Length: 350
Image 1 (tube, helix red, strand yellow):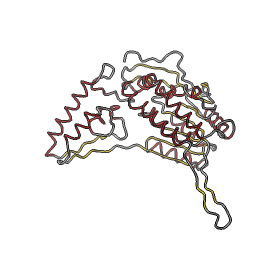
Image 2 (cartoon, rainbow, N blue to C red):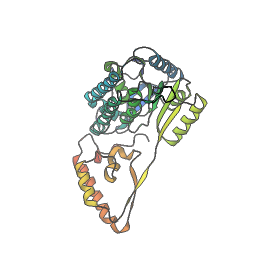
Image 3 (cartoon, rainbow, N blue to C red):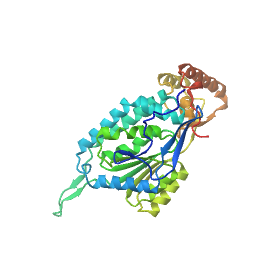
Image 4 (tube, one colour):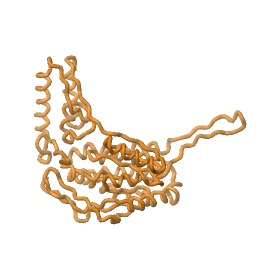
């Protein structure tokens, strides 16, 4: 990867009310490409408490007034579908932006992240007009109706290692049912995230419905402490989850959903079907995160579901290790010039 700079007109400011605006804070983030060791940009705006307040006000206004709360469910679904189309149409650019901060292959980033993200938006677009309530016979003369309604301003926060993919798990379901969202990326790879932000006005979302804030832990804390945020969803570490829970408990006891990190081993017994496993690997080379060999290669193993420890029965260890070497050799032959040795990206943050 020879060019590690972003276009001069690329927006690194905060995205609030369908506009890129300067942060009230003077703090700026420097993004370094870990493969080249070079600075990509030193001007990513970080959201402080005042910026969080402005984003929440805009999201609350969009939820309570304007066209969003009265928009039909089918129309909301069409907006989600259109965003998916735009993400795929701009997939090469988005994957390239993400690779600048991660040092990973744009090809792998496009194949794994962009397609998955678009599919998630389309899945929830299909659900937008299919959610229903319940009614009960009026045996006592009273009609009883259960109706599901959006709760208001929702916040999504996610980890750095798969940001283009995991942000959709927060945004898509919340938007499909009519909430407004404030999305905060990790401070490590914010560029692809900001590339998606510029697609929002073209998609047709009303101002304030979708906000994008770059920021570190203090930004997330400010969101969790804000009394007008009704729900917060986090994908991150155990320590980050504890801090979010603590902040939310001091605010309005907002709803909190946590998906926290972990690592797990693979245990291989003598009766494992090696031939079948290899056929499966050959059918989907390096695109499956689940499975022993590709898990070590994808994203340099920086994946919560990576089988980072192997426990192999002594009787089959030599055979298994030789098979593993063969898969790595085959993987090396498939990689292009941008993929680096074995297609493995560097560790994102030393």
